[in-house]
Image (cartoon, rainbow, N blue to C red; front, side, top):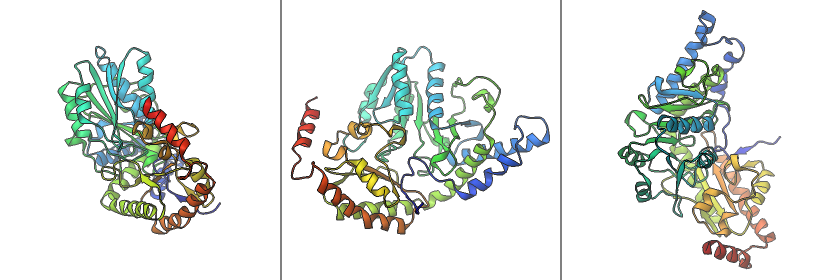
Length: 400
């Protein structure tokens, strides 16, 4: 297999070698149960404790506020269900139209169970309207659940302002920070966030491990009931190797945060060069208030899938949207919520970098992408000289 230029880090990241080295002994040598009374298990319990402290340090939280989970989806589900269970007399939830399916599909399911859900809109740059947030809150609102940063565009939401509004109505505030953790400094000790979800495989730990921050004193009823693990908040024998890996990944992410500008510089260089060399190309999402590693860019008049397949021939990995909705022929629900025209909607690609991305890799993308786009446009029936079908689709969409 040829060398891969991996620019799909919002989907998943490679395991850092230091993380792998930290976790391996807990798959082979130290296999004891961390809850056991004997010293063989006790040493494993100490590793779990260290992992919890490392994750808490990254979030500016206390170790007792960290619950280990299996993934981001479990964390989102546990937070939302716990908030509703703790407030059975409240039946209203507020979220956004651009959430990850882990939140959106759960909310749709809860609607069928009698809950009322308000889906906040976004503008053409993917930003929330705080006036709409304020107008949506009522005394019946049990929970506001929004993402910290969008997984497709990287647009960062004003979570602290939303959290302050939420407090005025006595509702709980959950934030899906799966994409933000490790890319933006977080401090839960000085935050309005009650619960926050993160996922290990987004920060160079393996898949199968995540964590949920729950502020001390927050009412929390567990979704998984059984043993006493995680202080009775998430039953099931701990994924020790995963926890050790997540702890190490959190430690490394915290150490890397002062250098996050390097990812932004590479992203901006790639973006500006594409905009300069390739006509009819636009950046989707607010160019300022977004993650430093993420770029979503629309190439007009061609299909995103064709671009991805062509880049794949050069070993370049990117994405047309969330990995959790891949396989769907529908355009991205995030870009649709932003009201983007069809000519952009179908040809949008997400590039997401990591601390392992190099200048040589970016230069290689710039070397092949302009010719690739030109070739695809030459074959496309929707080029700029014959875009009547697209214009009709846009008019139809606006008329709805």
